[in-house]
Length: 617
Image (tube, rainbow, N blue to C red):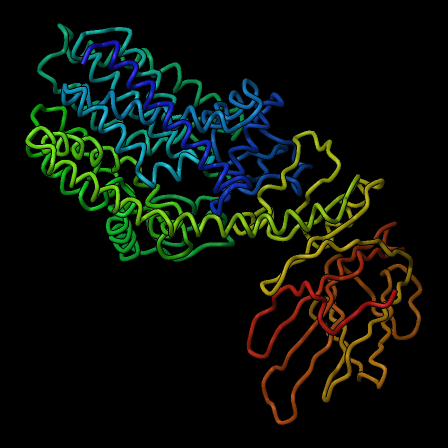
């Protein structure tokens, strides 16, 4: 194959991979994915477009979920390299999807270039790039704003430059390899280590180094890497407070490698054991063939290809299939996507994305070897690989489309509310953002937009309402049984506030008011109406008034128990945020309260339908 045809074929491969990324995002992830991390990367891209990488601490209620307050700033867990590409794509093309196309195109092209460098066969190299680009896990990842494909593209780019630079004794290539490896380490340090290390070792052990000594290779790579690493340390020092403190740790030290309590935030952890790590490794290993082009046939071809190829550098490629799974064994993520949520089912073994590279490279070598021995066997093999790949696609497509359908339902509810100059309080934001059904509702860094989306925080919601006095107040409430609703809110204030509620009468029912750890009860009369009076601590409270000594959330509710039932019974309540102002002289309540229900023996869940407890003024 001539150099011109080779370059043209590479361009076509890149275009196909890039187009697949944009189409996948449009079809499956127009409102982001079930992995809500992707919305955080876009949020950081918007910060970069605004000329910053952090937010003021007073934006805490509006912050992206994977972030935390550090000093007087809000710092995101993730670093700028991938968000910078998203921002650049948005600024240059008018859409952040351009970054997806660039990332996918670069990854596919780098697989082909790596195969060409290692196997010295351009037909095999193009086949490898195609097998990689058409693997379902790659296609799905390319359609999200998650960083795994971008990180792999950087690692493979560094690998190609390392191997070719060492072989040719090219100073520019080796320096460039250092730069790219440095950016990869800035983006995702551990992924960069696992991906680049086998090729760095291969470069140092290579017999042909273009006349360079091992020290010469190291010095040239270091010349490129050290400035980027210095920039990383400066970024860490300025943003996080220490050059060796990673932004990834801002949400807590428990989101790390090793066994024990693991999670993004300390209050939301699971206990991760060595047995869980092995279970996660096994689950990802079993799932991997179903997420690559050709399925188990590609795995068989890769074994054949590795056995029939030559050259020391091939072991660096093959090492990815061992180093990456073992490296991730003590990290809770691969286990969590198989046991804690539908990550493996919907996105594939994305932590193991580099493992697809040796399968594609050596699978291509095996496939081309079969094709060169006879067209008929190769055609049959290709048809079987296409069938296996096609059979693996419908499940993830249906699952991801179902998630998007849920997001669209919420989006429609918010749009139908016709909000303008409003403040909308949302559940499951902030630290619970990893469970949110509204990742697509994002705030401008300057908080200049018709609707601001705030985390629902109880009494703190009243302070936020006072900060934006001109905006109407609303709350999004949802449950598992139906669509969410947007409720208009108001602030009631005074030395005393009267709460009137009406409940559906039922045998054995008791109305109650819960404030802190104290509960006050009233029998439920024939009309079902009950009146409570709450007062500020500095007010002259009337008889029977309940003093709200501390800011918090009170509840007016109904407890019911069937005759002869000794269980806790069903409960319905409205939870109302409250705070005292003016030095304790007045109390403020955010009303109506949010409806919650607890069925006998179950836990509390939101009740968008409102339940049998209504507030009356």
